[in-house]
Image 1 (cartoon, one colour):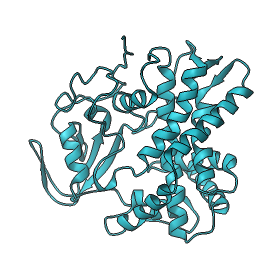
Image 2 (cartoon, one colour):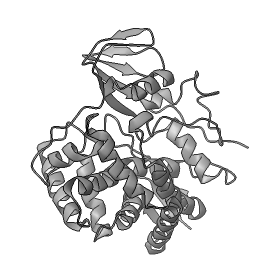
Image 3 (cartoon, helix red, strand yellow):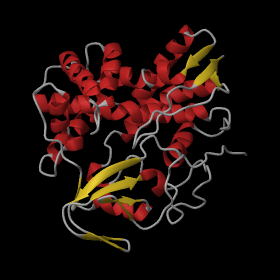
Image 4 (spheres, helix red, strand yellow):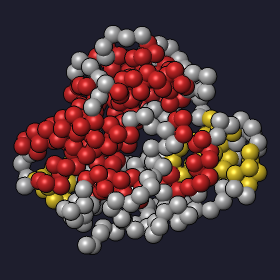
Length: 335
């Protein structure tokens, strides 16, 4: 059975010892990335917070940007919310909504605009109890566009408005609970869309005998929508052959670690059913708690795409971003 060829995405570094860059380090080997993710001396950059109901407030309240003292309790809020959601029901909801979108299409559809960026957020927002799930999706996307440091003032202003709108739609809850529920939506936004987009690119090449689960698992490894994450050292540590001091920024490259020959047999080859997963959802105490739910939402969309759509030859571009790889547009024909 022939398998798709998924080339190394542009700018993916090779695996090797940590490399000094500017005032920090780039970490690429699988074992080194796992070590950093599980070492309590390596912490996330913490957000200072801001006025209630703003983007700065959201960033300062969600577990994603919380320090070790607050992270466990805030993470527990998200875990509790997710525990009430059945992944199989999410998959079914996503498939139904995808079918509805395709029924409204003429002959072609942009997967990213009509499906990848709409369906998962609408389904998840509805299950989390937001009053208007359809409107919630664009608001979540506006927050996601400014969620990580470096966003410009215009994007931040849009995100401030979107956070207020999401709070108004959300079920009544203490501020910390409401923030972390919204955080679940924001964390799912680009990553899930990117995974669906990656699958849509390879619809023609992947044999029908390969399950959607196997397809998504290898895409997460070979072409991850989340390419990297950041940590900061709080003390000196030895990583591989390198001595790294305190207060050193670390950029952990999932895309490189997922192709590490020390961790994967034939690391560049698409192998359905491969044992041993990628690091794209993280590891350790800050590993993504919604992995099963995100995969279920993506699978619901991709199941229908595989059955009813074929990719066109229209070139695929990607949105510029330092740590994400998300297609801007993917056109398919609908059967």
